[in-house]
Each structure stands twice: as C-alpha cells, then as structure tokens.
Image (cartoon, each protein chain N blue to C red):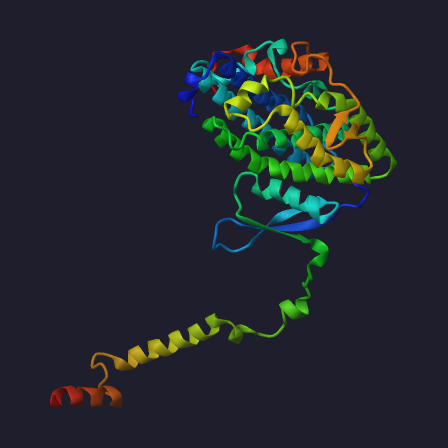
Length: 119
Length: 270
C-alpha cells in the first residue's frame, strides 16, 4: 500500500434529501482521501446515497460504561412511558367516577350546564 | 447535428466519425476488461471493490459509445460490435494491448489513459454531433472521480518507498510510447472542419501533456518530452499501427476470455 498502516473509517450515509444520516458500515484505508474513494464505492456506487460522512474511528468518543448508560436504580420516572401509565390510570378513574350521570358531581360541569339553561 | 442530420455529411467525415466512436468505445471496453482482472486480487479488499467498480464504469461508457456507432450506421447491434469481431478488428490504442502485469503497471496505464481520455472528452463535450456531446457530458462526471482516484494512487506509489516507486518508474518507461497512441489513429481533420471535434488531436495531446508536466515534475517520474517553446516534443516515438490491426498475444488471450460466453451461443438473449 502507500506505506501507512490501514485504519478503520466509519461511514454514515443519507439515503434521500431530508433523511437522517445513518451508520452504513466501515472500511479500511491508509488515509482520509482513499477512505473517501472507498466509501463512495462501498456505499454510493449504486446511487443509494445522496451524502456520505467518513469518520476515522479514532475520532469517535466511545462510551459504553454501564454505570453511566445502565444505572442500577429504577429510572422509569425518566421515561415518558412512566407518566403515560400514571395518566392512563387517572383517566380510567375519572371515567369510572363519571358513570351514567356524566358530570353530575363535577362543579365545573354543573356550572356550565346552568349557564346553558339560562341562555 | 443529430444522427439524422449526419446523413448529410460527406463520406470521409462520416467514416472519420465512425472511426472515432469505435476507437473510443474499444479503448473503454478493453481497459474495462483488463482492470476487471484485479477483482479478488487487488492490494486490499477496499481497492478491489473500487477498482472493479471503475472497470464496470468503463464498460458502461463503451456500451453507450457502441450504441452511438450503431445508430450512426443505422444498422447492427452494440453487442455484436462489442463481442462479434476478430481480435485484429478491434481499434483500441496500443496502450491497452498490455496485460494487467503488476499493480503499479495497472495504475500507471490507467493514469495515462484516463488523463489522455479526459483531454479528448474536453474536445468533444461541445461537439456538433449532439448524441456524442450528450454521452461525453455523462462520461466526464464519472471520469472526474476516476482521475481523483488515479492521482491518489500515483502519488502514493511515487512516494511509497523503493519498491513501489521503482515498479512505477519501470511501468511508465514501458508505457509512454504506447500512451501516445490514445490521441492518434483517427482522421481528425474532417471532424474538426465539421465541428464534431473542437481541435486537432495534436492540440488535444499538447493540452494533455501540458496538464501532466507539473504532476510528473512534482513526483519526479519519467516524462519523455522536450520543451520547445510552448510545445512538448516527445523523445520517444509511438509504435507503428497505433490502433491495430496487429495485436499482442496478451490481447488475443483477453479476447478469448471476454468473448467466450458470447461465442458459445451468439443467438442467446440475457
């Protein structure tokens, strides 16, 4: 080759305008210039990409510490789904309270009804 | 000028246009097959994929040019032109009679061809023969990338230490005379007169060499030309019969390979 050791480049590609850059794969090249040539052939020769990012793997900050990414305590309250479970429970309760005579025991609904009757 | 209006051209101009199309198509076709020989054995897997893809591009260019030729002549079939001739009927430049040899040789050959072809395409992009101008515009978009790729390899081999450099120098010494054939072997005067070719091939050659001179100087590679005012005069001579009909045994072997399937059943459809 050109005397330089091969290094890994990670390639990201955009399939169509407005789409996200997504990881396509990786390749070996001695330098960024040849890496760009190879990326074009690997991920662009069939016109399957409108943009490529070619990044030396060495430039990527790798983070896989389980203490940071998979902490031991319950973190369900940080997930939107945690709230939606609670909201769904409250909604079900409200519906049950409403029963057949919808809104009879609700002062807001009662005052609205009164307003409608007076007009 | 469309294919229809070329019917008004005189016999010599029409013949020259047909010869030009066949020469260009055969150049691309034969280079494509030689370089495809690297599939599976290029220096690294990545280069293997890239070089094979470049080779496929050349076959695509040849296909478009054979189609223009068939349309111009109003008869025939591009596949028949591509595969149905004897080796001595091909009109590719002598540069493309050599086998792939080693990696430096294939890089040097492709670099010399691609740069000469680029100069030729420049003289055709505004061709009065519109079907050719259209094909050339598309070819140039791909050739720009091929040139970048080959420049990258020339630099890396030239600066790549003793063995890569000596092999590259050896290949260039061997290839230079035959490289002069790429811009030869076509009756260019009537093509220039008809506006099909922007300038004589001699002028195209000077543009090609003028562009290469600083590259070869910077990389300190063999460049067998003497500067005479603004003119670059070759100190090596191109061989006789730049575009055949005599063909090397290496090309005859390649011809056996690339026509093998076609010859087995010329009537088959794929």
